[in-house]
Image (cartoon, rainbow, N blue to C red; front, top):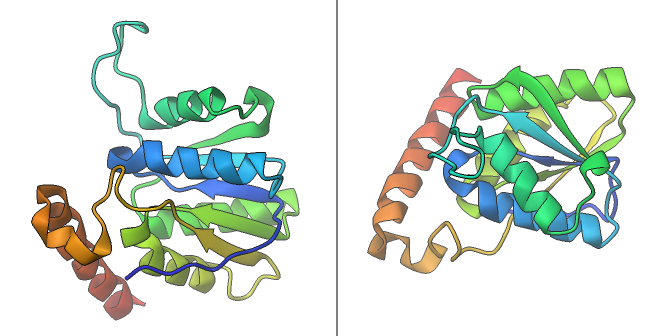
Length: 177
């Protein structure tokens, strides 16, 4: 279920939506940015809001929370872009980013997602970009912060929510392809 497809450098780092794992994904993207692997970070919008923020006096969207994580980790606001069109699946994100890459003339992307989601995300992006010249890389944060380790996922309630659901989604994507 866990895969990597490293790229040394890219035109942009794409942080996939994932409201329950936005912190680990944003922190991984910030680390890649600080390493000089890309000059830009792109966030997608899953149109979901988190809990109440007493500072903002509202329920911020998860992409707004990811922006906050990125800026706190040293990424300048000018290097962060949000694609505002809502997405509802990994397939939606891949299709949206294919269109975005075509119109912006991007040649390479590093996709950042959680470890448990990496195999399906990489397959989905490779399919969406199959007829393009855009190179797709994928990296994920280490497990343990917001996602359980692969070797002990069944010992964590969150693992029982994430892993079986991901297997079902992988089967659905395979059958519907």
